[in-house]
Image (cartoon, rainbow, N blue to C red):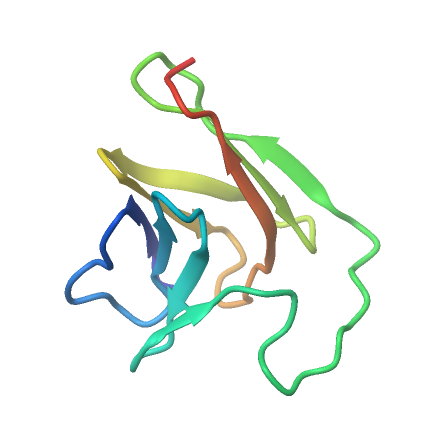
Length: 114
């Protein structure tokens, strides 16, 4: 699975890759790039039925150094999810599932550095 970038800004990122995320800094609306347009993130894609969550839900916290804001990720399965890069306005994440997708239930980050 390729790395995905999530940008937090008031304007949409230029040249996004399919699967990249964008959280609008003012409205707090989360969107993902589908290769053509920014799609609002919701529980299901348009036209899909809501499915059950897996039995195992992992909640983990990324590195909490003073220069890296903490990020909490909850997933549908027990595969690991971690940050690979943190920079002003965005972070990248990856997982160790070797090709299997990880569905992120939610992402929460502290506003300031901890």
